[in-house]
Amino acid sequence: MSLTDTAPRARRRDLRIPLAAVLIVIALVAPFIGTRYVTHSLIIALIFMLPAHGLNLLVGYTGLLSLAQAAFFGIGAYTAGLLAVHYNTPFYVNLIAAGLVSGAIALPLGIPALRLRSTSFVMCTLGFVIIGQAISKNWISLTRGDMGLSGIPKPYFELGPLSFGVSGTTNFYYLALAVCVLGTLIAWAIVRSPAGRNMVAIRENETLAESLGVPTWRYKLIVFMISAVFAGVGGCLYAHYLTVVSPLTFQMYYSTTMLIIVLGGGAGMVSGTVLGSLLFVGLTEALRVAPEVRMIAYGACLLVLVFWFKKGFAPLINRFWNAIGGSK
Image (cartoon, rainbow, N blue to C red; front, side):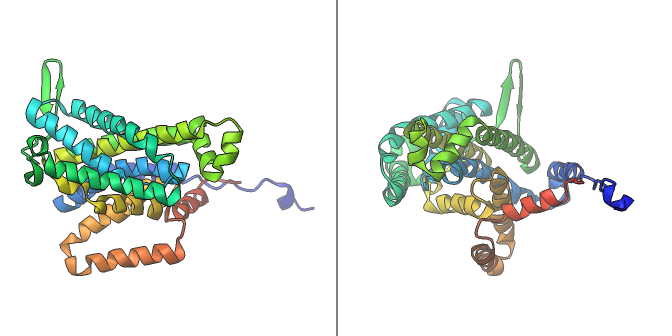
């Protein structure tokens, strides 16, 4: 046996930490690298990342296909808009209220809906979106109907005697980035907890999980409510960024977009939601400057996804991430 056989193999350098540092720097300086429209596209991606995180908890980790995210997204947007317009409340109050109201409304909706299975549950959640849009159109005294809520102020904070506002695309980008980083960490903490393992058990085999003592229906209801909270927080950011909310906030296009983010990025992976938001929202939003090729590029991306990356793009990124890690 040669000395080369008995000597330990050389350890490769772990490149993940420097790469992560580079990505963090890029995220922090992004508004100064690209144009104002690129920053706008990133803000839209960050806004949709939050409800997509909630949907990923339902679809990717618990195995419940829901189309109701647009309904809770709209509820959060209207909650924040009404508070800001009528009571001039600070942004953080609107953010918390939007999440809590969306989660509270999800409770009575989820109790009967989660008794249903597969296709029936999907159709029921689709009905929530239709009902939400109908209410926003017809409750004119509250929502102003098709005219929508306009004049929603930009976010401002009130900390004791100090108060300051967030104006401009660049400043709002950093606000959205901070909220999304916090939301991503919360989603990651949930899926890495014992509750997250129980969610995966329900997804894999609900009957077996229940036989092992997991209160499956209660877990599904709680996840449904948490998912709505994420959507409501995203709706608050949406309302304060666009400064207007209308019944179009409840459109099915938003639900399908969130579903594409989760499935395209990689269901059951927090990193997949981040990647899917940047790819399927940020990139397509940036391509609005070239409308003649925008939908062609979007369709081509979906075709590549369907035929070559059936589990989404995130597993490919994770393999690369593991490959650059240090090993003996």
